[in-house]
Length: 153
Image (cartoon, rainbow, N blue to C red; front, top):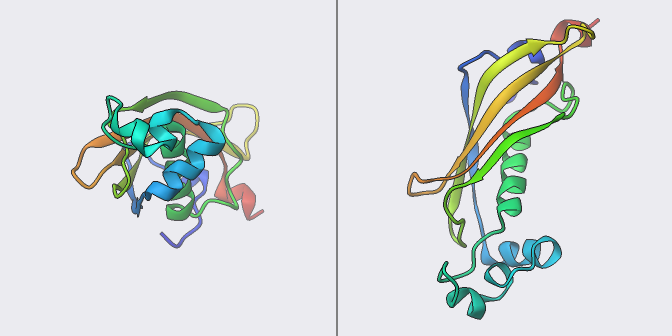
């Protein structure tokens, strides 16, 4: 998607495929060492003895990868005004080294701001699947975007 996304561009029910990314064991371990150093994320031998049978990505790493795919797949840096938060995160299947994650962005609702006419809130679900078609993570959240009409004024 080469165009810039503004509030006006989001429509309830709209779905966008935002690309894919293959995860490596080195990046899984590097992220986990810094942010989530549980043995099944950082130690291949301990991970092999865990219920996962090998190293898996931290759920927070998966969320960070999804965020990056949103930013790479939807040009919205001119209009994005941040997020007031998430409504839910679900880690459904472990992400392993060599997995290729694909991301779908689903617009659930759009709500113009009642008090600030230059913006609105977009309610979304992000769905990450692996190369086997399994959903590995979903994120329900919201983000604030400038309206195109006010950005050009």
